[in-house]
Image (cartoon, rainbow, N blue to C red):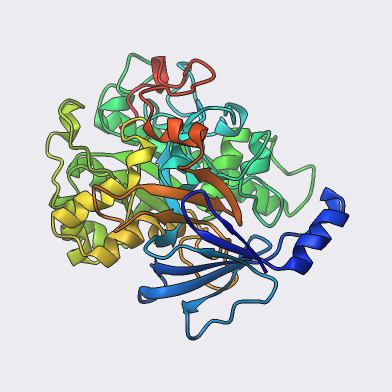
Length: 445
């Protein structure tokens, strides 16, 4: 056996046979050996924490996880000693603006036909910052200056040269994502934008009625080209919403705005996730009764907007007690992606249970994106997305040491370039000028 030291002192063991094969074969012919991470405290989220655990990945998937005395390490595995470290599932950010995303423009308050897919810069340093925070999956969306600002996209932070290469894809081959909606004061502007909350709701209601009629015409046509209505990209997106194929991700803050979202959802039957929800503590029972999940943000810095003045750090524990499913999000740049775990720590500090807080960073977010069959927990057969931490997930002293996506290490704190990203200031290594926060794309939080 040949033994070498990892840069952080992790012990790595390779079989001599594997080494010889690697030498004589061309790079294209070399198949990576399974990797076995040993000695860590593992939080699988799908079950109880594992002390002194073994975590094995192969071909981008999780193939085994459990205590050292119950998991057999394959003879050809690369063994990585992570004793004293912590392994958690890759974090899922349900609401992010990295990638210089943009959506609708100033021409109309409702633009469901726009796709952030067509605006994202995959070389934006925001992706690297997210990896430095342990994030492996993110929902990228446009701003909240519209009632409907466009179609979001779910991305896996694997290496990629274009947006399609990092996007989650549905079984039918379409890029996966939801629909961004918003209410409250962000969308109040001069005509054609609404000036009141009542007008905002009426415009949305009118558009969904039109979409329902469009859907019925398609169904009645039954494939007859003479009867099928002319193609309408906006209507197509809303029909996907009405059919439950596209989840609405809804920016909302005040308790009355939250209830308006629930009212519209009840009228049209679409699936919705409430985002931000500063006054969630005031309507927790109503949210629970509607069986609607909440993607929560906790902002502890001064400023912001009047709608968020009643943000309450007790919301996580209140929602948990009411039985509401809760995830956290960054709304990056509102909260820096590198500090995502701190969001859950603040929830724990205010009374949320540790288990629920960790779920809110991982599996609950995955459920809100319909990705829980692939990510969010460390289980056999799921994608090998995980983060190695220096200590307790909710400690202010804990650092993300490494982030892995589909079995590939995408962030390493020991790498000087990665450390610069993890510790640099605003715009660190930003390759281009951020444009997504100008004009009608302002006011994300």
